[in-house]
Length: 395
Image 1 (cartoon, rainbow, N blue to C red):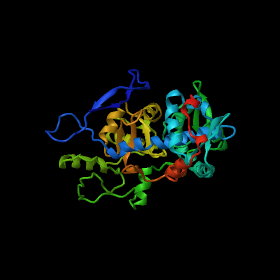
Image 2 (image 1 turned 180 degrees about the vertical axis):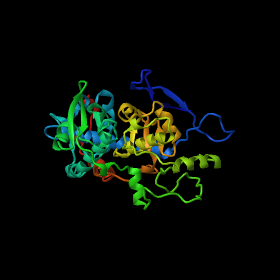
Image 3 (image 1 turned 30 degrees about the vertical axis):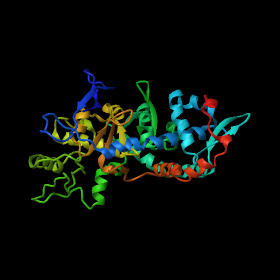
Image 4 (image 1 turned 90 degrees about the horizontal axis):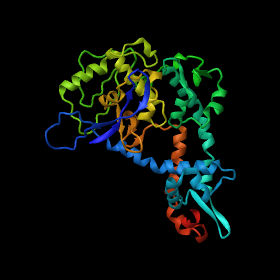
């Protein structure tokens, strides 16, 4: 039995980020099938949350060091940057990865931290990765605005998913002004909103449609009169989603027949205005799945927290029972409670625990973090006594 953060809305219809703990049963094997709905774990996607802890720590410390005037940080100032509790995790990382972090000082000089020469060399490649990333960011930001009902989103909500999209800090000052023909920032009811200036129909193509086109399936293609019901739930056709049922899930023939009908059912594009459709319409409900699929596709790692999805209820007219929608379509999405917050994954984007397609920034992150696996033992053995970390001196 686990608990997943849910989504609720207020009685007057205003969507807000409230959380309830919703019990969802996981099958442990043996015995008769329980009557309550079972939510099956995907251990490989759960593992993603554990695997990200080390890289996120290393990359955050890199950013802190690079933000300093002399590209070095006095160890006594580390607590100011990360807080007292987190300081100890960062101190452990500094000692564990001498191939990335160099501790200097000693005697009368206060101990300081900077990147090693190898780390600095690779860190210098980040600017090129950011340049390669910029057209991708602009395109995805336009698509995000096109998905919204009014082609505008509050800046504070974009800031909420800034790191997931790959946007730089202060993107509203560094990125948006470079494209006045595409974006504008205007106040609506006292709040700054990012507005889309020009609609581009060529961008109104979902990641799902792009995948089908790459597989040679035309948008207007039909289905053969007789089609084999596959146990994995996947069907070839212009309206189908790629699914991966969790291990242990055994759908019967009746379930697969109903799922086949759903897979074959056409539905409106997520880029059409949601106000045109009644949510009670099965096609409109399938369109919601398409909107969630596209939203996750726009992120770098094809995942968002439950709170982040919940924040966009009004912009995309998401259903009030969003959690139940995600659970129902467990072949497309996966919710994990690993980590500090529950996270929603787009399952098709992963092969086991590995993200299949990586953007330039993620490739750079991978290359930088890979330093911790090279020369770590040798470097730790060759460290001079004066550079060893003395926790008593840092406190």
